[in-house]
Amino acid sequence: MNTAGLAFRNLSRQKKRSFLLGGAVAFGFFIVTIVDALAAGSIRNFSEQFAFLFGGNVHVVGAEKNGEKVVNVTRDDAMLREVLAESGINYQFDSKRTITYGTMIFEGKKAQTNIFGCDFEKETYFEKIMTLTNGSWDNVSNPKSIILSESVAKDLKIEVGDSLLVQLNTISGQATFGEFTLAAVSKDVSLIGSIAAYCHIQYLNELSGLAPDEFYIYSIMLNEQAEQDRAAQILEGLIAKRAPVTNRLEALKTHPANPITGINKQLEETEWEGTKYLVQTFNDEVPQIKQILGTVQYVSLGILVGLFLIVMIGISNTYKMVIYERIKEIGTMRAIGMKKKDAGKIFMWESVLLSIFGSLTGFIAAVIGMSILSLFTFTNEALTMFLQNGHWTYVLSPGSVIVKLIVIIVLTMIAVSGSAKSAAKMNPADALRTSK
Figure 1 (cartoon, rainbow, N blue to C red):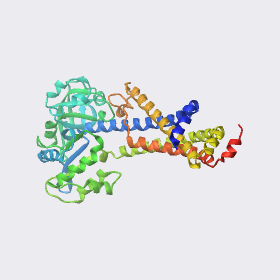
Figure 2: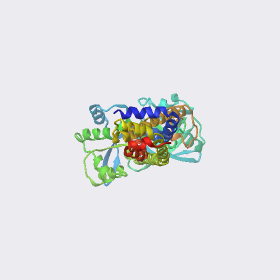
Figure 3: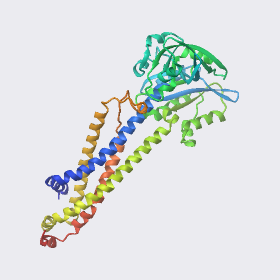
């Protein structure tokens, strides 16, 4: 017997009731879809901003032993470029960065920030991702130019074209000073952007005691953030054939909450000659991001279960009334040969169809709602680190959507199970004699 077809017919003939029950399911799915998707989009935006700060989301850093001290420096990028070409990894661009921390000094005022030495001629994406509020990219051609964030420029009360001193340490730990000219001021698109200054890598290398072609970190911006771990393992394996390298998987095993600590411990406890490389990802450097996303997904699942515990009560009570309304109908079908289990299956199929149609409606409504939300521009500084150019973005995880759909189907079937058992146990003769 086509119990699924009968279930669909029953839902169709009771349109108002089906609409109300399906609407309750849709509302629950709508809420959790928005929570999940906007949280995932926010975390992705934060990750991308952080990745652009360092020039990529997979990083290779060289390390040398200077007595008991480990010094991070890479002398030559030829081997790393060769490894990247051999890896077959899909990426947007690669870059070399020298990174240090310095104190900006201008007319007696001071401000501390991270300084990133970049190759502006090769890293042309800067003009696309960085918005200048003052100055221009033409000014950056000066080898001693520097780009400061709005907040740092405001603290120093400095204008484009002014000269400032920067105090920093060389690679060997000696204090030194450099003179820069403010070429432009960048918009603070996030808390991350507000703590970063950018200058030419050659001049920063000179101040840091590095040769012009040397650098601190080799970064790769992947096409897909989800490929970070796989890409890191491929690169580590290829580097291991050519030079000493740390063991990222071992670091993840010994220090799952903070793998970078595990990698640094490997550097401190081992001896090597020349340069030893470490491969790390954005997820390794900020493991809390993955934890936050996982927590949000668990919370949204909890919200879903909480909502449906309430919805289940309504569905269960509704179907107790449905059983009473259909007593003669069920008796008639049983009398003409319907099996007990088929009578129960009709109600279970109704619960499944309600869940699917309601969830689909809630999902579509959530996508439409988030698409409309993404059209608006938000300027709240507290939110900018989670936005993409001032807009909310969302990421839908097929796995998460399927899990929540299964949860809804199971919970709805549980809510209807009592009525289904009652229908299956119903005596045809008694049902036909019952008057409503």
